[in-house]
Each structure stands twice: as C-alpha cells, then as structure tokens.
Image 1 (tube, rainbow, N blue to C red):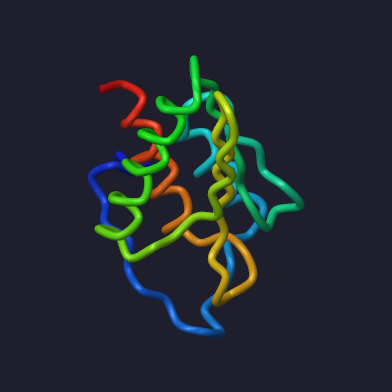
Image 2 (cartoon, rainbow, N blue to C red):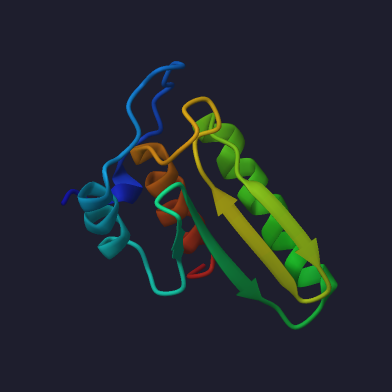
Amino acid sequence: MENLTAKKCIPCSIGAPTLEPDEIKEYHKSLKDGWKVIDNKKIEKTYKFKNFKEALDFTNKVGNIAEDEGHHPDIYLSWGKVVIRLWTHKIGGLHENDFILAAKIDEIRLN
C-alpha cells in the first residue's frame, strides 16, 4: 500500500461508500501501533504526554494538519493525554481520508 503520509485527503460526499472490513484491516496495518478500530466505523488512539502544555501543543499541531487536509478529528484533551478519534462524519464510517490523517498525526510525534 502506498505511503499514507504522501497522500492528501480528498473531499467525499454524502452517500460515498464506507470502507469494507477487509479494506479497514489493510489500512490499519499501515498505521503505527496504538490505533484501535472501533466497530469498523471509527479509529482511535491515545497519546500520552508529560504535562498539559505538551498535550495542548500536540493538539494544536493536529489542528493545523486537520485544517490543511480539510478533514477534522474529534480531539479529547486532558492533563498529559490526547485522544484522537477519526471517522468520516458525512458517510458515518471510515474512509481512506481517516487513515491518511491518522498517519500524518503519528508523524507529529516523530518530530
């Protein structure tokens, strides 16, 4: 499978098909450890930090990437922890865009 970080999220419209379970498994293999598939409809990962400031800085970086991609995750911020939950709200399930954004979010932690 092509490197997800090299791809760009593309707008999808209401009624676009969601990924099938076998497609989800393949995309999931392309992500770094820690991402969980929830009911074949969402993906989620928890990131841990030393303090609130580091968690907030990470959250802001995720927000910048989300704006660049035009694809926005649900973000839960608390002291020393950020939970990212992705799915394509328009179609009520997972799309390639969710995995592209997940891969790009993981890259933040490498820098």
